[in-house]
Image 1: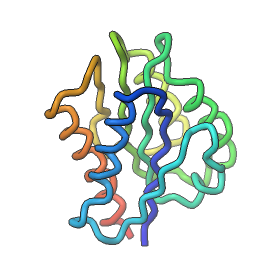
Image 2: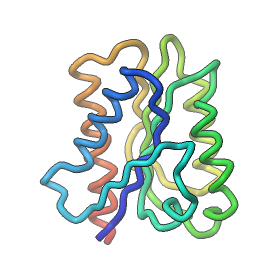
Image 3: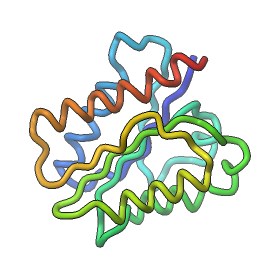
Length: 152
C-alpha cells in the first residue's frame, strides 16, 4: 500500500477548511490503496518523509513566505531525504489574505531542490475559500493520492 504524507501548518479556520477538503479528497473511496497520514509540519518526523511515497503540503503565506513551520519541516528533512526521495510526487496548497507569490516560490524552490515531481497545479487561495475553491482542494487531494496509487 502506498503512503501519502500530508504535511501542513494550519493556524486558522480557513487553513483548517482547506486541510479537511484535501484530506477528504485523498481518502476518497475511489482510491483504495493509499494510506493517508496527516502530520503537523512542526512535529512531522523525518522518517515519515523518508517512508512516504508522495507528499501534499499545506501552508499559509506569512509575510511573503511559506510558514515558518513548513520551512522548519523542509530544513529538517532536506539532507535525510535529498537522495532517497527524488522524483516522488507532490502537490501543495497555499492560503494568503492578499498575496501568496513568495510562499509559492519558496515551496517550488524547496521541492525542486529535493527533485520532487509536481503532479497537480499548486492551489493558490487568496481570502476566504468558496465552494469552488474547496472543491479544488478536494480534487488536489484526490489527484495526489491517485498519482501514487497508480505507481505502486
